[in-house]
Length: 236
Image (tube, rainbow, N blue to C red):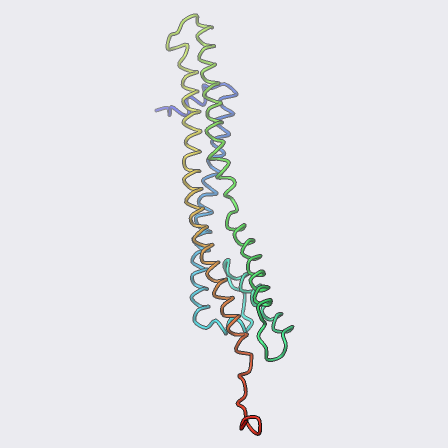
């Protein structure tokens, strides 16, 4: 049994075939991006949660020691934050906390890395945005072209019979369906993946906040406690 889509594709003109072929290729590429992004974002979220749990077990240890590479989006943030924290300790006076300016520099380093990590998480979203917005218009172009072919068939046949208009109408309807078939999954996936990016971004922001708090507390512990007064001045 011949599939209606295949039969319409074979009976369409060069323009209709080009439109349907382009939509088919775009659909394949869109689904490839969707599955790839689903896997990568799921992995990124899991790695963020795992590292955040390990960091919370002993935050001070993650500041003072050099460990191996940390997988996931939080790895570069930890490296940047720890590197800036050590740099601020070197410029601070011995036995004194790094101060508000040092904390601000750590926050700036983390924010810079956060922007880069979010950009990595959003890679591929442009394809979905273009597919969801452009596909209906490509299908609409095929619709208009198919209707034009239907009217051309009527003029050639000299009548408005089914045989004259059916090929053009079929081409118009198939291109419309093809455009929507590409656009609907793309727009649904775009919104769903944006939500997943927001979840990972929330974990990144949470880690940044906890890292800065840990760095601030650790630097304050470097300040020696005030020595008790003794001698002549104490007796006064």
